[in-house]
Length: 242
Image 1 (tube, rainbow, N blue to C red):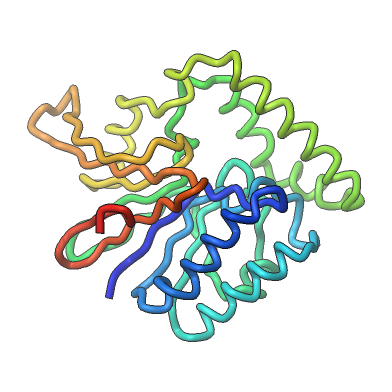
Image 2: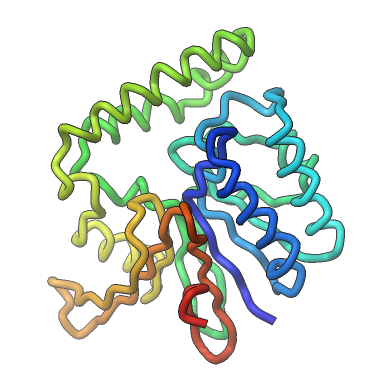
């Protein structure tokens, strides 16, 4: 038995090969899991649980099949699909988690999150994030017609892609000091997150508490290959390392 962690699939109709990889994972690897954790940006964007498409129906069906078989599946929202809500959870059987969650992985306390909250040097994004995560704004947005919400989402997505071309790579990465502070706050020495699309494992010292060594595992985004982290009692590895 093992725990699986994935993030940043950005599922959309224009990338059917990524959808195929995800469905393959849910049908082949996930049924043998202790639990599956999806750490945000499962979809490229999400404008409400009333959105419907062939892609969404297929994903819902396979997730429901997985959870109905007894495998636990958990979801932390990302910066693209933070409006996934209770209806989607009910229809798929997944459990929604807060922005930060501490879990026990074979005796090792581990903090999991999407990762966007750790990129505090990107001040404009953090200001935007605070606004769109206000519950009253979300309620107002969800009251709009679906077609209008989709139009707004496409404009925001296009603006985000344009901004990325001019932003420094450094400000779009995590802030190491804030990472250390956050891990201290939750009293953990391992962190698993996505968002920055740079699969890898980092061992970092707390600059203020040099006796502490932190383990930070970064999930990659999905493209021609899938970035899947497996954790079992012997340790952890990404799918291509197994």
